[in-house]
Amino acid sequence: MTTFWSFVLVLSGLIFFHEFGHFAMARAFGIRVLKFSIGFGPRIWGIIKNGTDYCISAVPLGGFVKMLGEQPGEEIPPADRPYSFSHRPVYQKALVVAAGPFANFLLAQLIFFFIFLFYGNPVLLPEIGKVKADSPAQKAGIRPGDTFVSVNGMPVKSWDDVSKYIRSSKGETIQLVIRRGDKELRLAVKPEITTIKNIFGEEIKMPLIGITAAGKLEIEKVNPLKALQLSLMRTWELTKLTWEGFVKIVQRVVPLSALGGPIMIAQMAGQQAEQGMLNLFYFMALLSINLGLLNLLPVPVLDGGHLFFYAIEAIIGHPLSARQMQIAQQIGLLILGSLMLLVFYNDIARLLGLIPSIPQP
Image (cartoon, rainbow, N blue to C red):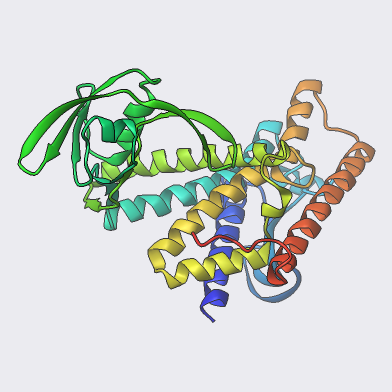
């Protein structure tokens, strides 16, 4: 039951914000919105207010905003053309379409903002947990329990600082100040260029000294301005990482079996809910970023595909023909349908144990 309700919370929240982005931008431009639906298919429940049908539909795997004049070739009476989507300048149409993915990025940032503001910023302390045998760190006299004070004169506040400074050394000798009990020691360590695997499974070379963190966290309380800054940074970092993941899938570095659909999302939402609402909302923010980026891909029927068509329209001075749009839509549906079949196959294969199950976050 936890899995079901967490799935409903996550999916409905993402869909609502995405469609609300389209809706709000359309209304801002005075475009008439005929329908705001969470879900596809038959209408289950809703209310009609100011000419807009706000409803919930039977298939809860998406949603849509229907605007006057949105369909190609739709006949619009002259009196209604000022409120028609198709009769708007191309920049307005592009902004209405882009507002959906933008809303997903905004949702992620809002979630992170409130997490940082009310929970705080978790900081991994720069205390050493383990020292690898025969590593540069052990040879330099570093011991478990030591705490970094500075690296090459740069003050250290978190383990992220330690990792960043060691990586930037490029294998050159670094000067450390560490705290051991009530004493401060100055040590020199020359990192070894070591081959490791990154999060995508690729082998990369990186300077390391052979230490791991003790895993101790400190929750830093922040003010609203700092929370806003941290939320922007976290959203940007995860957006870059998600985009790299898309690229690695295309390059076949990440296998297609890693993709998942509604079942995988439900399982992961359930896992996060069991670990607490904080984890669930963090997962929701990450999924919102994924949804925003996915919709920006230049695939017909996705928002990115429409933006691509509007870019062409802006360049050539007129929309593509109805025939050209129809062919593009068919190609887009084929791509999207193939992707949906793949993720559903992966979901079922995971349930049957044919491919590895999702890792515990």
